[in-house]
Image (cartoon, rainbow, N blue to C red; front, side, top):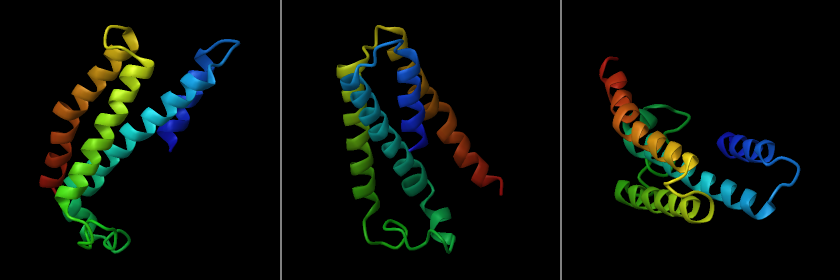
Length: 124
């Protein structure tokens, strides 16, 4: 939720004197969907073995076996693609600077940060 709050605050501060409530709502909804997807993939799918080892998190749906890994990946991918599509169609286009930044951050995360997370656990 901090990502959504930050996104919404940045939108309001960058709007000047008039805030477009419809655009603010689309921004927060799209950001929430993309963040939920990223959190699901990161914490539940990629780090399921580590989550299952911790007493506090071992009873969550995926580590406890109440849902399958394929269902979690399907849900996270669907929500992530829907949120990205929502932001692309309602807020940004890939041609403007904001869309390019969004695309470059997503590319950097998928190529650079996710593999580094796996390497960090391999070093322990």
